Every structure is written in structure tokens, then in C-alpha cells.
Image (tube, rainbow, N blue to C red; front, top):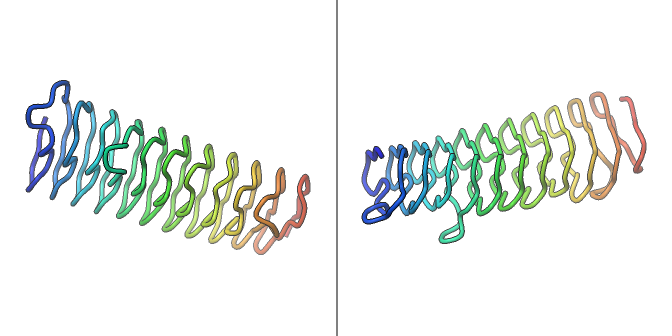
Length: 193
């Protein structure tokens, strides 16, 4: 283990099984116990991590839920990425605040400031663009473009590709909006913008 910074991996003292970890920054990996193969760089990055194979780079990236952080194989690059994570696994977040509220969602990919910011339990979503899928909590959705699928809530298997491509309701299924400002209003439909 390598710890650099005040409080970095401070919880490791006396712990058994903690190995192959790197923590750099104020309380980075602060209360880690029995975790392996993690990298935390930044103030409070991975502070409450209790699991394996996570990488968090940035201020409070992967901060985690105290005493309940079991998510593994997550990657957060940027300030406040995957901040609320407790049990989600295999998520990738790049950009400020991406997947900020994600707690137990799995297999999500978010790239772009505030992408998937309010997702908590939705899984297997791909979101590329500033504020894309901002309100999402559904699963199996794809959004590409500035604010694409921004109103999608619990909707599943939806697609929004293009600047402001969106759905009309929060709960549509199998709906696709393709093109700038494309807007789909019903499930099992496609609109070309």
C-alpha cells in the first residue's frame, strides 16, 4: 500500500487483507478496510471505499456511503464523480459530477459534465454529453449529445442521439429520437429530427 497525504488510508491501520492500494490526497481512501487493488487520487477520493478494484481521481470522486460501500470495479475521473456510490459495480464516469447520485446502478457509462447526474439505481445506460440523461433512473438507455434524453426518468431501452434529442414523458419504452431537437412522444416509436 502507498498512502500520501493527511488521513490517506488512515482506516487501514490494523486492518487485515488490505493490499495493493494507492491513495494520494487528504483522506483519500480514508476508512478503507479489507480492500484490494484500488487507486484514489484527490481530496477525499474513495473516502468510504470498502471494496476492490476501484479507481477514483478527483475531489471527492467515489466518496461513498459511510459503512455501506461495497461497489467494485468502478472508475470515476473528475470532481464529484460517483459521489454517492454504495453498491453499484462496473460503472465508468468521466467529467464533473457524472453519476453523482448513483448508489446501486451497475454497468453505466457517463461522459460529460453532469451526465447521468441523478441516476440512482438505473443500470446499463450509456450517456455522452453535457447533462445527457440528467434525470434518468431507467435502464438500457443510450443518449449522445448535449442534454440528450434529459427528461427520461424511469423509461427503459430508449435512445436519444443529437443536440436536445428527447422523449416527451419520463416513462417511455423502446422510443428513439435521432437528430438535433428530435422529440419522440410514444413508446415503440422512432422520430428522425
